[in-house]
Image (cartoon, rainbow over all chains, first blue to last red; front, side, top):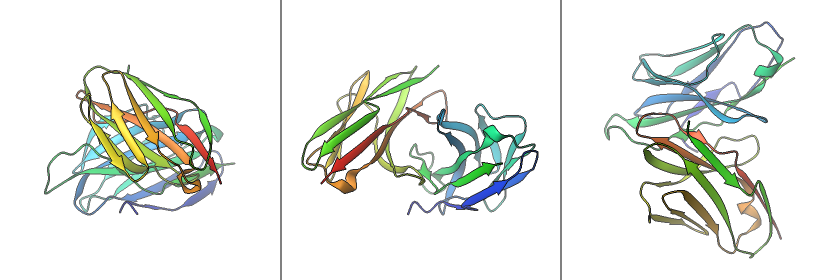
Length: 116
Length: 110
């Protein structure tokens, strides 16, 4: 158990809909990262937040957005969903407040999104 | 752009048959190289971080090594529970994200 939690575990929805994925980082970690894993693309970085502020952005679609709240949990919002958005979405965390910046990212169990 | 290539794509081993997985990388300014294990439908599980050429890390039957161009994950006397996809990732000094390879799927038969 990495200490990173994600909800829900599974999500089934229809094209055009909007969903929210939630992530709680390990206790004390300030950074949250979101990754998408699909069969044809592998694990791809979407976005990173550090202590509530956006720090880095990958190839995240404009239909996707994220935020990190004061309690450090994060949400990834996916809107106008398309069939191709079906994938596993992982959250990872790092950078403990008492150890400064660290490199290792610990991953959560993921949310499997199916768009029908 | 950072490139991480893993080989082979798949590896089938008999229990006890040692082997190695390769991760070659082309990046500008390597900050760290990471190995993860991923079981089907689960999140990647952290195994090792390597920072400089010549560094080695060990954990049970796994040993990771790093050169200036590639990393190897050696599996010694594997057991069926070592069956998983092994992912290699890099992080550079210019970036915060991890760039992953496509992975090597290892199947160990009893």
